Image (cartoon, rainbow, N blue to C red; front, side, top):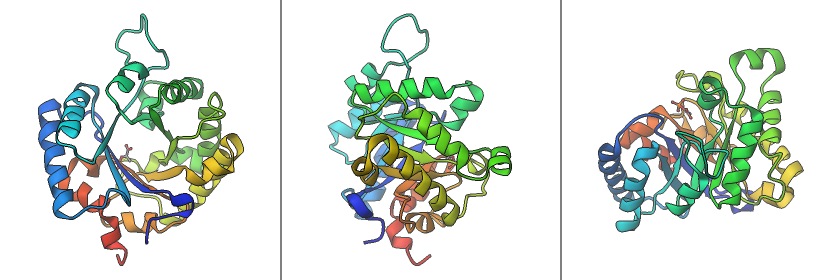
Length: 266
Ligand code: PEP
């Protein structure tokens, strides 16, 4: 079956809403998304689907998902490197754990760029998430300038090594390769470019966490993913899903991306 990879990696389609949709809009959105996927007879055992709403929405989304027994996953877009204390505005991994949030995005390029998150902070966030049973979706990716100076994989590889540096022994992480030049630009990487970097990233996971973990680790591609280009990425042996920004805010489009197996001919 397309998308089922060595090591039985279940495909993963993740929607990063960024700072969009309040908690009431989130409830309506998740209900409609679940109906749309159910109408399309979505097979969650073959393709996991998760949404990453803003913090103020997460409790509402969690209530809806558990109350209505929806098969959608959910997560946060960031987490504090600290567990508790005088860190105004921060959200602890303990709070995400208490909400039963399975995932958290860590090190998104917008956090690195606008909030000046360093590799060291990202490593701490990855470690604190893992220690509290919240699976980090670790984002790495090169800027257009990096690409010109160092080629496609040097920066993402270095970022992933740094991000995992405090988490030796971890068994459950997700990696998202998101070239910064492709995010929100409408200019996605080619499937071959994504595969080239994803393969290098899997070597890093193998180096730090061991071959077995590397085999089981989902590596996503992100950057201008749409229903018209998703199938090409998922055909690559080392690309196991997508982190979707803009297109995750359109229910029909996001559901169609999640249904990528129906576009294998495209
Ligand atoms: C993102 O920000 O994670 C992303 C992939 O955005 P977009 O899909 O809009 O390029």
